[in-house]
Image (cartoon, rainbow, N blue to C red; front, side, top):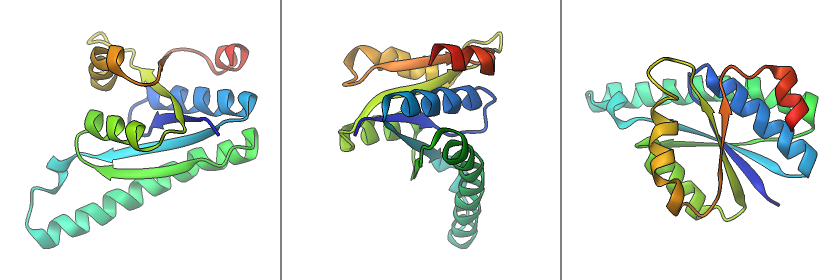
Length: 151
């Protein structure tokens, strides 16, 4: 089964990327994999403190994931898979795409700040020519109704 890969983070644009991935998956009989990456700089502390921080980060991610997963299951009939990794986001995204051959599309949300679409969209766009899958960039300001209409 083909899967849409979407990145879960604390950005506002993440919501539109999640919606788009779930709606497209529901309409095409695909699945959704949600990746959350914990940056390594979060754990530059003593070992005991780092372990506690790592566990808290995972719990926060799982709680955030459950909000999206419940909506996807209840509204779209999609049961998403959660993958949590530690490292640099771009590296972890690329590694997961290489490892999971069922991932067919990477879905990213573009920020609406004056500074640009966001670091992840900027970095992934630079490597898009060599990716084995297409990237879909969902505008952060796109309305829920418009997303539903185009998916």
